[in-house]
Amino acid sequence: MTAAALRQVLAATLVLAVALAATPSAAAQGSDAGRAPADVGEARKALVAIERERAEVAARLRADEAECRQRVLVNDCLQRVRERQRRQAQVLKDREAAARAVLREQQARDDNRARAEAAALAEDPGAGQRRRDEAAARQQRRMAEHRAREEQRAAGETRRAGDAEAARARQAGREADAARRRAQAGERQAQAAERAARHERKLRDVERRNAERDRNAASRRDQALRRDAERQARAAATGSGHAAPTPPTAPSTAPAPAPSTAPAAAPKD
Image 1 (tube, helix red, strand yellow):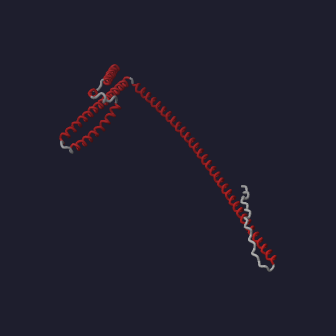
Image 2: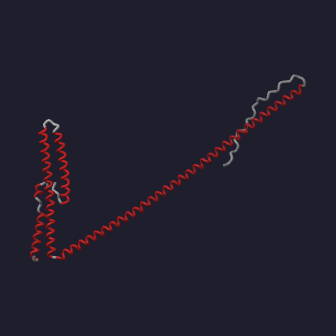
Image 3: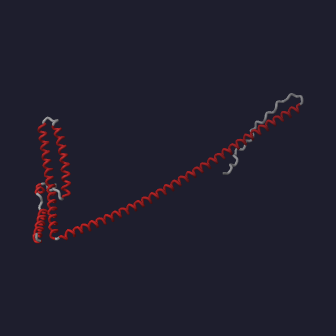
């Protein structure tokens, strides 16, 4: 095949590809414009959704037929239900045709492009190597960009890990300070309680000594009063001779001076 013939084939293929890309499919024209997929990705998604909706329509039909059989006019109910199911199935069928038409058009464009590339390769054998070199260069760039992103991500994770470790260290330091302050507060409370207990013991000792001193003073007063009474009795017996003994003078009922109730000075801590 000559170079002129290859150029003619390439030109005809490109014209056909442009015409196919510019002309909408009959299925797409016949279907609802709002439901026609715009590209191959939407067409594939539409096919998946159509299969799911078909299963839902079938399940709904079975449920409606079972409900119709519980009514009086069974046939009329079944006819209405099945007619509605047929309309829904036709809508789904039209949508499926539109989606598959988009896929067919894309396949035709891909085939035309492949034929055009093959013709170009036949006319210029070095073009394939250049495309391979360009593809390899793009792949290397993508790999370099991917490595750069991975390095940035690793650096970010390292930085975040360091920040998290620093935050944990700060939190641990704060918790240690709080524990130390609680321990110090507990020690101060224990020391205060010990001082209060010692002071209480000293007060009880002072009260006990004061009470013992008061008991001793009262005992000495009683002994003194008894000795005075005995002396008076002996004196009265000696002065009267054989006279009838006079009864001993009753001890004075005057109240004795009250013992000092002032507590002794508490010993110092």
